[in-house]
Length: 350
Image (cartoon, rainbow, N blue to C red; front, side, top):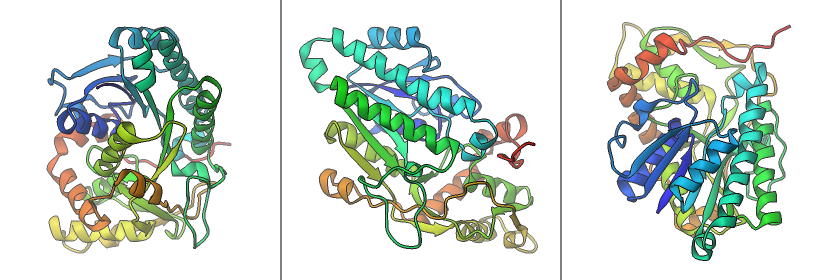
């Protein structure tokens, strides 16, 4: 199978590429603009593999997308290219609209045009997996879980643009019979995660003995999913998912943000001890606007229909993640020096 993976140089995308090439034996064509969050070093394990190829392009470029489909003749698309950081969307939403909405539209149209010219067998078996987020559902109270039928209620510019892209993907399935499958995942973590996100930011700040920022009182809850479990889920959805369906992907690992930070501190105290404790570095900072209270995914449909199970608990996954960052300064230190040093993002400007 030849698969176009958009955003393949990003955090989740690179995990998908490594899984698809090394574990599943797929031919993978990465399409990535290489924004600040794209990193070719994350693809180093597959970069020299004959089953891997790379196209540096913006998914908003219709001519480039049409050429890539025509040249590579894919059997499927896994669409991960997106601006994804909520804080950045608060202070600069325009790029989120362009990439997440216009880019998805452009890609859907390129796939539709490609299938109109493809032979009947290829068109019948083609799949377009649109990868989205649980944030489109909005916020939960202290009970309940998001299911595939939960109404959309996005809170941030990021989640609003992802919700819009989901609706476009659904409409292209219903109107044009494009074989689209949508997945909505919970918060990912693991190796190769760009250091603006909570877990890598806390690990690297702890290494530098800098303050560990926690928004508000730290009581916001997220459901954490190890990125390699997510990649395996997408492989199953691509192989056996039903066009027109949604599949929620969650790790069943709900944690308050403050508890996530404390667990990282405990790992750091054990793996890289300092004179006092990394817990002493925790600092509560003003909350961000529109901060959703709680996310929790019900992954029953994925578990029962496609026999997927998360292999990592949060305890095992966070241990692996902390150790990876301790071992891989070669990967993250250039990013901390040249791209993002840990400053607060998403502050509203007057």
